[in-house]
Image 1 (cartoon, helix red, strand yellow):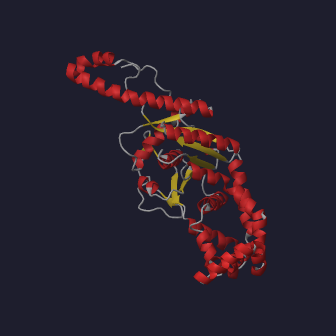
Image 2: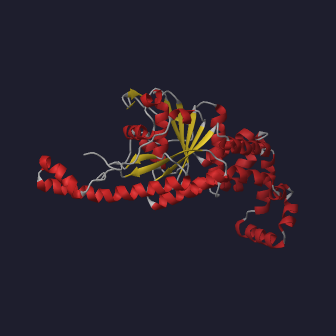
Image 3: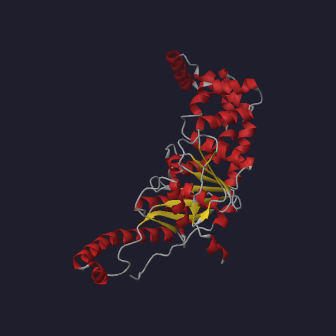
Length: 385
């Protein structure tokens, strides 16, 4: 049955991505971003690259898809065994890890502390223990620190970063600037002052509040804050260097690119449009758009009657009628998805979105990821022409 009005199927060029050291996958929750990140890493490794996939998604989806019981804070080599992509064995190495916020902060403190005493003061401080694991933004800042470490160590050709859902991903994009402003701001200078001076600077209302808190809990909050920030003082140059370095790295189109992952549904499209604008405002390079779980079948431009007539000689009248009816139902989803893709492509001026079909089953293993990689990346033969 010939197709009418089918949607073009562009793919990403691996060479372009392999020219960058960082590929950040961003998008809203529920669009399959972790799967796309893992499949991208596998596809880039297939041609011989040494690729690391890093997730800061707390769920265990990446480990499950890669056939690993649990991913930790250190890169783990994935056993691709005899896995083939388009009939060729995977030639390179695929590594994967999940960000551990607390361990990343601890490692940063250990690396930047001027001496053992300063290191122990920070690690034992109650304020630090809260900031390094629970405070909003700590995840993004620690991701930047880990990204900085991995990039500077130079052990990978490409690092694929799977970010949290888009609004948090935007926090990730803003984190270098926020950290820089904090390090250069007056608030930090206030807490670097002696505890008594800090109390006076905070003013009477805040002083009374901290005094009440101290009596109720036995914790001298002002003293804890002052000790924490004074201990941190010897490390600020190193933290500042990382904030500036990662910010520059992410904005350098020769080093980093951002891949927007969406679905064809309205919510996913709206988030992708919003995110594309923020990337543009932040001067970040957009390396492509992947629309996942797109219904591509249906009637392919034929009428139900035409499909029925085409199938009747082979299937018989009754079965052909049922098949044509099912295809008509599926065609509703296909047309809806085509409209969503077209709206997104127009809004962000992306002429060649990469479409990943809606698959019959969830991607839960390496062969499934290999299939997604085939759908997402240009085949080697095409690239050689």
